[in-house]
Image (cartoon, rainbow over all chains, first blue to last red; front, side, top):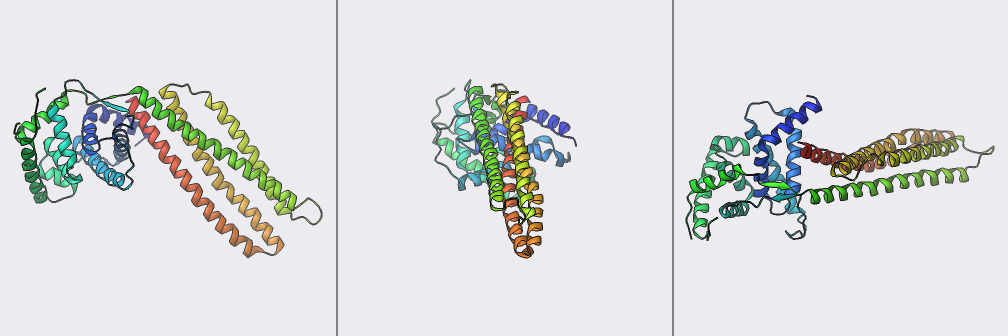
Length: 167
Length: 191
């Protein structure tokens, strides 16, 4: 594969699936959106020559993005700098138009989960099956099932304490 | 207070697909790229001048310690000459780089291309320094052979060479990573 072909594929994937990467970024970090976004793009770029079309592009991208985010989170925890939301100048600005505040709440709750549960929740909300999640995350299908049940119960319980003011 | 069922959460989740989640803050992006470019530029200047001073200083020291007369070690003299040639090469490279800098404007893409160019230049500089150790080491070993201290000189050269290659490869890899990150950012912007 030539570099030009690789670049064309990356451009096409980003054009069609950029939103997917943003979702993972938002679920995995509160402050370093740019760094994680960039890291995921790099890993996707590297992965292109190994993509064999045995899975859909979306599945492939989720696998890369989630694994990168999990590794990145672990690394960041080790080198946790004293960064706060205030002292970081973001390259990516959140689009504030027509925000359903329940979505912010949902992202907030996902962020509170551990790294693997975050991935399971994202994939669950995206409509992936337990089998697909198991293959992507490298954990058994039954384990995925247990996690799904626990996460669903947890989110529903937490929603009881959530004060929703409407859009 | 409400209780949301999971299906409701899924619905809220799916709604975000209909609107862009993020927009790029161009000013912040430009500042980010510009500061990255400045870091690489500063690092490049320090590396260039550092190498020029080291090679020039060592060449002069070798000549002073080993004046060209009947009893001089010709290999040490050759080493000094090699170092001066290296200095000339580095100075020419520096001038060409400064001239090339003018190609880049102060836009986001200009700064980004400049930073990528500098990271590539740094990589080539590390490679040059690494390969340049070979002839320098060969001349020094030959000098040791002539003076009857072959083993001692070879051991010192080998250890120094291993250390230098380690340090250079660290710098090379850091610049490679930096260049890749910048290129990926460029691709992201041009997508």
